[in-house]
Image 1 (cartoon, rainbow, N blue to C red):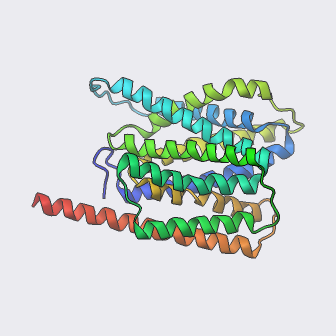
Image 2: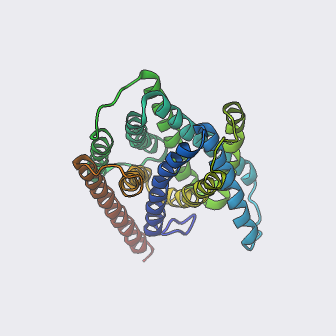
Image 3: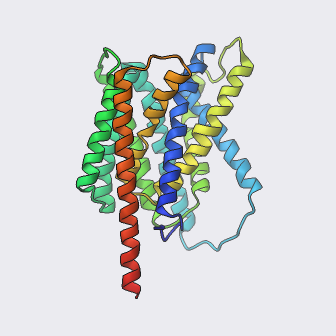
Length: 318
């Protein structure tokens, strides 16, 4: 049940993804609180999120004992390509999503981005990795997307603007590229924390000029609260969540990753009701239950398939 390149068991990879998805779900609530007490824009928030996460992960790497390993020929070039591609994909994913929210609203942007993501990931994984979704996987993806639509669109009227939809599709493309490439490169091993550090560095560099144009330092009457929220966003839904995401996505099938990460809007909905005082509607309950059932079913199927593969490998060795 472990990936031969990284040594991480599939079950532990699933747990990493579940924690990452739940942590991502808190980012929206933190951003909402930031917008209430300051004039920070979405690009500046995305920049500080990545820059802060980069600083925290660099500190973690400095505290960890370093083990010197002889580099294989060409490994540095492959590592540079890996972190550059991942960082650019992450920048597209985050920035286009925030822009889509501004252009067409939170509901439509979330449905298009998170709905198109699994479809693009399944297609990319089939072409590049030879991964088959299967009947159970297809049903799980369908159930998760239905739950997402009910969860986000069930609360009221929405407006759809073509520019916002295009931006959301571009965001889904960045997310799909990041997921499929992580799975592809994960077959050859690698350090998830190192990948996350490199990706954040690239993303921060890509976002810096746009953040400067938008205004990187917010105006606020509550600077300590803004600072605390920024530290939280950098630490939990960024540094911690992305390190766990890259570790889990390297060993779990890409389509499974895409469905499990739909826990993000579930977590956001729970926090919106429990913390921000939003109303608990039948659509919220129904959508959340549909998505949780889909995630649980796909996680069980992934673990069962991994156990079957391990037994088959042991039988071949015997």
